[in-house]
Length: 290
Ligand SMILES: C[C@](O)(CO)[C@H](O)COP(=O)(O)OP(=O)(O)OC[C@H]1O[C@@H](n2ccc(N)nc2=O)[C@H](O)[C@@H]1O
Ligand SMILES: Nc1ncnc2c1ncn2[C@@H]1O[C@H](COP(=O)(O)OP(=O)(O)OP(=O)(O)O)[C@@H](O)[C@H]1O
Picture 1 (cartoon, rainbow, N blue to C red):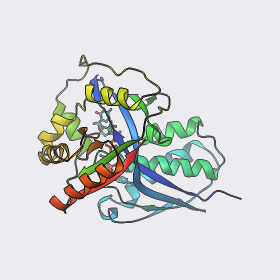
Picture 2: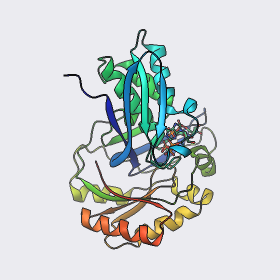
Picture 3: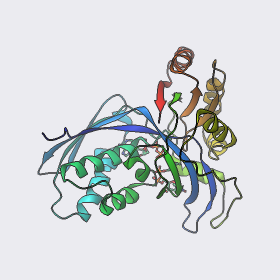
Picture 4: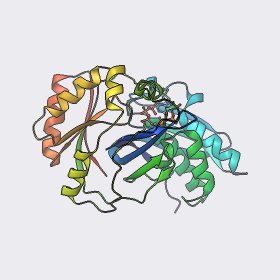
């Protein structure tokens, strides 16, 4: 029985993000503990002669032109590397906010690579998949197998899968797009500049307590520059931090999405309800992270 050619493209959450410096090519060296949410986009692949894409769903109008979609970029990069690759039409249901720091486009691109691998019987470790992912964007490699892990370099160095205790979260996006290059720019590092930063311990199995301690001791270095680029992020952080039972409020990636962590799903759901009532125009989701 062939497996259905569909997959979830979950939101990527940077639980921590330390900037270690800026390379000569202008990209920034990072260290980030990445997890994935229960909420995301959906992608389906209908095998066929031509490579094409349809996009629908609530946030489809904001995802740019289909020709520039990262789903097609990743698929093209793979076809260039694998002669005779079976292809087809992708159908993307777009639900995640765009340019939001939760890797929507990256996760969609990684989902496309997973579906093409499945259609062609390629193992997930195939070097062409890894290369196509890396060339599509810095966040794509970590999204290939969406499980919690440490990400280093500019996203190409991945640690082993981490067994995190289930985290109960609320994701909040004030519906302002934030362009990643503008935030890195606003950090103001010179090329070749290194920063002394506390590095993350390499732990494979966290208890709820050790994870909570590690998260609190860490930070997202892109939070201050992102708040300068888009001051509403500071308001989102304050609103999340002010909800009952919020253990930690932090921005993901380059923003503007902010997450709050809670002890259980009931408290998280209540916090989401409260923020959605206060700010009906914002995107608010209670979800779990792993
Ligand atoms: C901030 C993160 O979301 C953290 O996970 C990622 O590092 C960004 O990943 P991404 O959006 O896939 O990034 P890309 O599309 O590859 O790069 C967009 C732009 O962000 C800047 N960029 C990105 C990644 C990185 N490590 N250093 C950078 O300086 C570069 O100006 C680059 O031109
Ligand atoms: N499938 C896609 N979904 C969303 N945006 C896409 C997609 N393909 C291309 N894009 C373009 O990519 C840009 C970044 O969108 P995306 O939602 O991936 O950002 P992000 O969440 O900030 O990503 P990251 O956290 O990796 O920095 C947008 O300007 C958008 O036009």
